Length: 301
Length: 49
Ligand code: SF4
Ligand code: SF4
Ligand code: SF4
Image 1 (cartoon, rainbow over the protein chains, first blue to last red):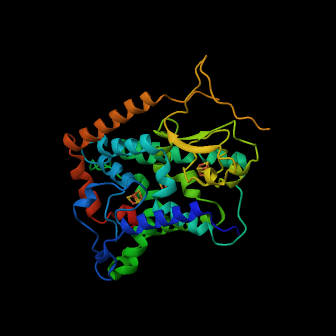
Image 2 (cartoon, rainbow over the protein chains, first blue to last red):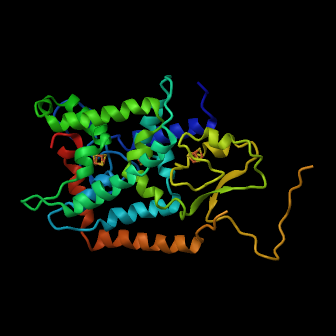
Image 3 (cartoon, rainbow over the protein chains, first blue to last red):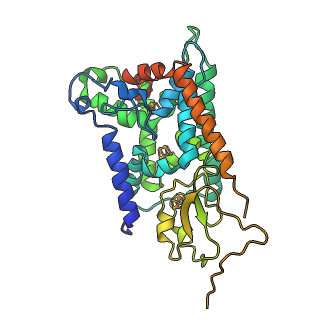
């Protein structure tokens, strides 16, 4: 297996450091009756997928928080969380996915297990990539907002029926730490546990399958990728068409064809691997040359 | 190559998002809802609900 690039090592340190910092409520990790953090920091959402029911979590999960506002007795739109996430998306697009999401890191580490890797057939891959938008539109927005039980209560459908992050970061540690919780395990836990296992096992063979196909937060940030302040630039004049960037990208993006693809997690791997520095990150769109304007020309002699 | 969205569009959207966030915090009582949800163990999240 190829060794990590310097960029990849730095990125893992940042991801890991953030993961530890945002789950550093030590008391929560002690055996005994569950005691999750209940302080004021939980007013704020972390920018990545991190379950607020994780014993160590110091902040709220944005996807869980969004559904909590939608599914209240009095139907409300989640202006705070949607506005907060849109602000992040408009500033940096999916940069959070590449650098500040613990669940992204967990999947990356699983993919490091040395086994033969699976390449999802192109057609299936293309269709499956839309699934995350269905998760966002149906399970995070529509169902929690519109569905009500006879008692007038809504449900957080994505948390309840899909999210493997909640099972891995919240359910399993809490069940392991507290004996009384083990008695309450039923079909619901088994269903979520099976989905979590599917996610964990597929991550060993496919790079970040949850991020590619399921994550509603990644889907939300992806909506802003092409208009965000931070944008990737491709310099055609420098490119020698070696194809190294596209070969390096584990998210299946070809940055030459679409530098601000919705699938790019802005991990910078391609930027660092390009031998001609034809790829870079910058602010806003690439400056266009106006008619009559002179530009310096690089000659390859 | 396709034309990219001008930075002015981004900045306008950014201002709207920040305003939206502020509205939610100041007038929609959302911080309280988020805090209440995140400070109790969510049974649906962990698979016990
Ligand atoms: S179950 Fe998933 S979506 Fe729900 S709060 Fe936990 S991490 Fe967030
Ligand atoms: S797609 Fe979701 S799980 Fe993956 S890195 Fe982004 S926020 Fe995290
Ligand atoms: S295109 Fe480059 S920055 Fe984007 S995900 Fe692929 S390797 Fe990372």
